[in-house]
Image (tube, one colour):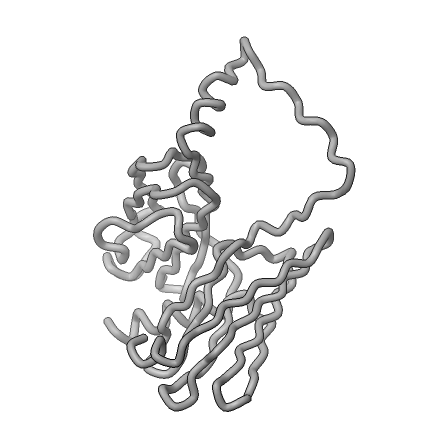
Length: 216
């Protein structure tokens, strides 16, 4: 099972999400619990699935290795629910964007019935930035490898990652979900992400204390 999970993690880091369909609501409210699933019988075994919630707006409840999973919405925003499964033909992946509404947003949607449509927003004076990424999290891939997951992955974005180390070294990656080595002696001090779309550029940075990697 450990080897299977390692393979799933590897697949998430190198491939685009495709080839299967996740069923479930695309819009839910904060504190809602919803079940999402993929067609049964696709995987080689009952527990040959791996669900990952990319972002901090939901949490997975219960077993994440079956063909369905329950999530709980904990804050408003865009969440990506991703699935990798092992089929007789090999690995298959897919993802689903879930918009989570807080109480005020849910009230607006409820009142905007066909009898009282919401007014159209005024045209923007200049193109808005279309980059939806606002965070990324670190996930331990193996004993000395860390994977970074942006809360949104989009094939139309260009991702440029830079990991700076305590000894002065730096490593770069253009993968959407990169992997970087680390050790207690060679810890990562800063991870920077530059995202470029057709309309704009956004940059993010996280700083890590040396003690963080001792317990990672």
